[in-house]
Amino acid sequence: MGLLTMMQSNLINSPNTRGQIAKQNRAGGALPKKIAVLYTDAKREYCSTDEEFQTIDGSYEEALLFESYFQKLGVKTCYIKADANMTQKLKKEKPDMALNLVTTVKGYDYLGATVPAALELLEIPYTGTNILGFSLGCNKYLMHALLSQHGVPVPRFQLMSSKTTPLDPTLRFPLILKLNEEHSNIEIKQESVVENEVELRKRLRYLLRTYDQDVLVSEFIDGREFAAFLFQSYNRKVYTVERVINMPGKKHQFMDYTHG
Image 1: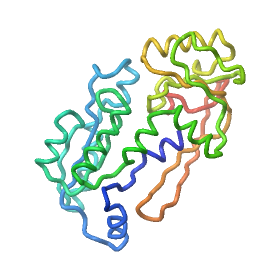
Image 2: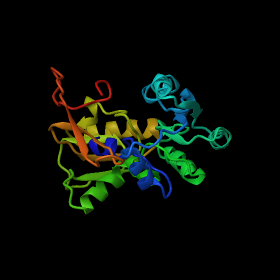
Image 3: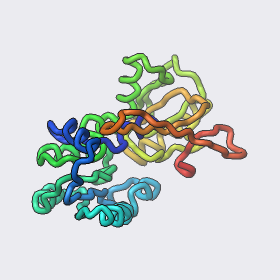
């Protein structure tokens, strides 16, 4: 979670101008005259479950929370949802910068990368991770593999694509099952941690049937949880916040969907 949050935190991006924007901001440069606030097109039909829909419901209302701050700064705003008409609206509005709040497009996290891609093509500076960062952040298996290849310790893991995928014999219970492409702790709950293969198969069948996507299975590790934030355009430091978790009566203490 921490690294995923870091990769999707607000970083200034723009084709060929990231350095110039950062330098201008540090030097007290002029604010953009107009900002496009991009938000998720939240529709129940895009989501497999109510739980998934809850993570995007109210996206427009959340986007409007920025309005008063921009008004105080004298910055004009326009609000554009991330749908098939987004590019045309951006061309019409001609913003100096985009505040990218989009987490998913048509219910697919990986399609969220199309938003920074469109902004890159239109040469509009924007906040949020770039195309590659977003794409990596939407694939837990790939993230685990990359971290492991670069010497970062990760629990042993395996990607399962069907209910009959053989379990890697090197994995040791308890194991935790996570949807490979979902965000916001969706389906992360106590029953996600399994103690034997019978429990694993039951949970695996449910996830594959409900969400129609691969499932990441990894060894469960009890421990402290942190969220990490990187501010690239200013001091390039990483800030961490520890999550204090207190769930009486629960065998495993971790940030689940209900308490996340």
